[in-house]
Length: 70
Image (cartoon, rainbow, N blue to C red; front, side):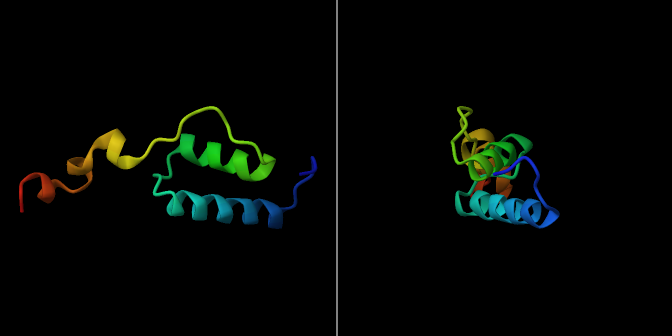
């Protein structure tokens, strides 16, 4: 991308970033958003690993009833 980015291009990047986070089942944390945004904007993956909600918080943190066996 060029050094000057129009508001339309920024909105398109943001939309694509949120779509990829959703498709990858990644939580929209600032770290994940920044990594995916950079991948889309610059075409190269960043070295920081992505975190998903299940491995970060465990399924029971997102679904307390499931942890209680209900």
